[in-house]
Image (cartoon, rainbow, N blue to C red; front, side, top):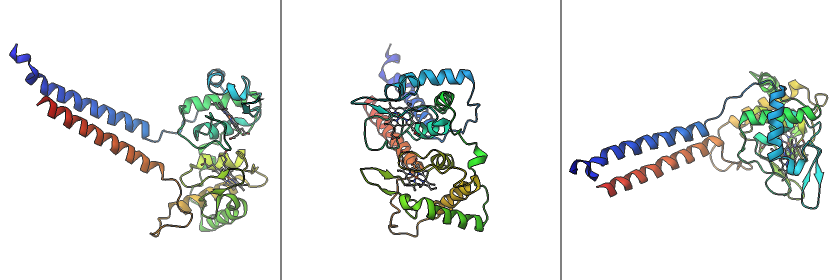
Length: 271
Ligand code: HEC
Ligand code: HEC
């Protein structure tokens, strides 16, 4: 019997803790690692059915069961017929939607839907009335732009975007508590979708106003602008949000440190 006393359990418990620790690290990595872009057919009936069900639960309270929109004393949801899949992908995967409370502008926050669910929601809204489709990866990829294309992108950015988003894309305030967000760290897909859907105060930049090549030149320009390292010191207007990668590190390291402390405390107690 003495064999089974606390002394015996000790090494096994330690191993268990180690396994648990590794599991949490793995799980948090899987959670934080950037997910692959799934290119799926956005128009299968199954997907639309899945989207309809998700919509009924998460969106219909404001937008109505069939995206017809509603205005009551407390709730105002605009109609979504014809806003298109691109608008849904943009709004939901940047976490703007579902809106959590009425405010001047829905803020960017972590999304609560998987990529598959976002695509299903997008397919459902697209089925209500055709609107801009989600652009493909090739459509939003600026590729290797020549210096000439890049300076044209810069020119187009200064003419069309900097009035609201600032010359460095650092964002800026607008009247009535609204704001144009910083464009630093925004994905190519979301840059393109914002241009074709025009969220809130932002105008829609149709292909007549900015051709697909123009849009890619702007995306390429912003990528090079934001890839440039800071020259040290505090850049004016460069105080954008901390990039997602850094948060992943801070969070991941935090979890690992907490685990270390916990294991150490457990070990001390067992002894
Ligand atoms: C609490 C109310 C509320 C909920 C819940 C909500 N929305 Fe919205 N939604 C709004 C409001 C208000 C706006 C317009 C203001 C804005 O864009 O910030 C809006 C705008 C949108 C737009 C942009 C429309 C356009 O003109 O391009 C889309 C797309 C959208 N919502 C989709 C969704 C989806 C999908 C869900 C569910 C996952 C959802 N919303 C949940 C209130 C809500
Ligand atoms: C009239 C002001 C205005 C102009 C001009 C404008 N935007 Fe915007 N933009 C906004 C506002 C306001 C938002 C935030 C909308 C929201 O949160 O619903 C926004 C959002 C965005 C976003 C989403 C960023 C994020 O964090 O998800 C992108 C990308 C963007 N704009 C790119 C552009 C580009 C590129 C141009 C020029 C082709 C441009 N905008 C021109 C006002 C503007």
